[in-house]
Length: 277
Image 1 (cartoon, rainbow, N blue to C red):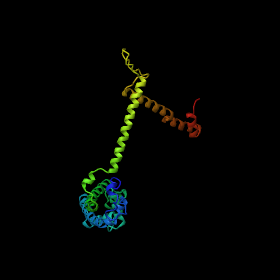
Image 2 (cartoon, one colour):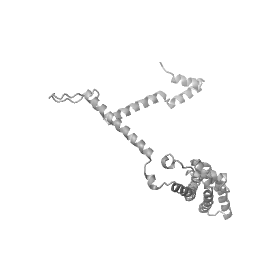
Image 3 (tube, rainbow, N blue to C red):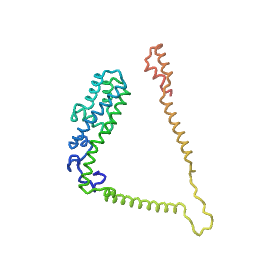
Image 4 (tube, helix red, strand yellow):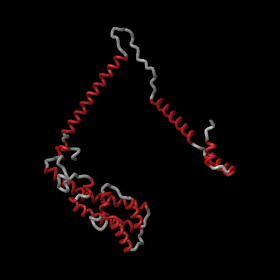
């Protein structure tokens, strides 16, 4: 926002930290201490949602699985994927990638190994977990950030009307750019008219019919130019093949000759492929 509308957001820092001195980059947003409560709420929600989804999936995939084995598998997956708390390293890594709508290959392999399912099923369940995360992320972390952004804008008297009004700097740049383009177009028109007058001057008192301009090279159509380009391309391709391709029978003959003459394969290949000139 500071780059798009510096006239409105020049004093913007991190609204989640309530600091005007911290730039809200993506890396800071992922680890922002002002969003720790929202991340904790997100962790509890996705832990329950992931567990429910995995239980339904495994019950459908392996209906004869004992309940205690099913619970153990699900808990192992949740522990490996999300860690033991929202402050764990496992959750920080998963949160970083999932917030960018990504899931790592290592997580997919972990699902495949712990649940003992195929790679295709692991990818499918990983995709569903990612969708659940995005839904909960939007309703917790992102909503919290947007609410604080709205409060900051209200405190700085930024309303929808001021957002719709163009930036003075951007408007001045656009006006200068349009003026420059207008001057260039006028210069081009003047130069074209001068060139036309020089190439084919018109004598006003001459009553004879003005002859059309004759070009030294005939104008070719687009189709004719394309056909010529295709012919040139195929010619270059054939030249390249004829210069670099060695037919497979050549190697078979060299192997046969090597057995009969005890000449090394490198020497025989060099002998057969040398330039006759």
